[in-house]
Length: 290
Length: 341
Image: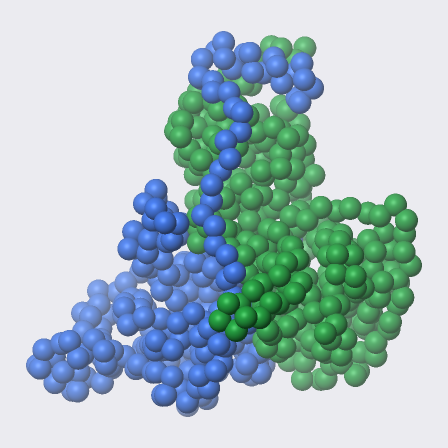
């Protein structure tokens, strides 16, 4: 049977390029001002999975994402770069889920795709930076985890070997059986879109997207099943609703404050020679430097 | 309900308790005092005879030790199973982990096992109450887990009202290391490793490790020259190096500069990097998002060099030099050489 690799990916607002209009005047986040992108480390994860597939030959890469209907964009993006299939987990009942509730939902989708050989995810998403969902999915699947992966080294028999990045060095780990791997940004960048794949997959659609499509479109998808992106709801996953959304999330946001800097008594200087000379002299005389 | 506080004591390559864990013991001690409860520590590894002594200046009442040669170096499954079981047995209410590659690998797995909440990279931990209007219930003495969120544009206070323990990770340097004047000898509880781990926990094995000695130590530097995305290039970062060498300081960087490849990850300052408290912090081309300033706003003096007079960093800087890195830093070098003799 072919080797099955599941990639967990998330569509995120691009918080790296937050402009002045990112916050509304009432202190809430202006999501419309932030472009939605493929979470950067999830692209490293996709590349990791594709390299495993290249090595194995007979392997299948399936992207799983949880989010609103438009998150199907990143599944198509993944297909353009080499993924074979995609699953969108979407339901209003997921709204407000923290990492524990999110990992519950994702673990159900992973189980529905079992048997699988490997689950790969980005180390963390840039909109939360928690790095929690990967390990929590692994715990719920009762499989071991390798976090901070930097490189897929290869197989030694049935065992996979992975290089891991630590603060002060590296570690090479070997795992037997299904394992969940989270990939660090220092791993290889994801390969770019492949023109042939773009032509092949650009009409890939979820059920929701199909409802808005024209008749002839629906017929095309019936004839080409690889264009169907699976879409799963709470019911499809047979999920316990009390473990999802706000009720399934132990963490609550008590308070959100927008950041207001209190003005310090500061001196503004120019870059002129005399200003800099004066500053350096005063720092030396007050023993801050020198 | 018990209100026990636990700190996971990470063991370094050299076999010591990591600084970040001792910092958390310092914070944990204060929280424990406020709540009138005991402070507990968990250490897992091999040959941990020195741990009781190393934590004795930090007010730990009970130290849970699990020792075995299989338990060092760190492996996820054995460590998370031991920690989860201890926390369950002792009915822990608050648990703190360092936000290191070990803590961030371990804590989420433990939280999932215990079905409790976890807040990553907190910049402040406080005790407070929470009132729910709908049910007219007041939750007493919850852990307020405070962290910047959403690209640093907001600061969020997170609580876990119902599902405990309440767990948080904190980066190194965020909490102050505050040894007590009077040492307390902790009661040591040694646990039998075989009761806590099984053979299947070793499904992953370490086949090689290459650990380098710590090269960069920006945490201990008294003078830090930090560069942001605005520095513009790796070449311009060379100017920062020159100034740092001259002043006997270290070079730091914002996340944007690290992401752009201008500086090594070890130099990153801020919520997802290191927190520093130098006597002088020179921020070069750093706009000053709260995720960065969270890691440096306790510097004694801040000088900002920026072309944008209204960059947020200007609000916390003592001196704002309006100009480019290329023009200002060479002049600082020139006048330091001239005046320091």
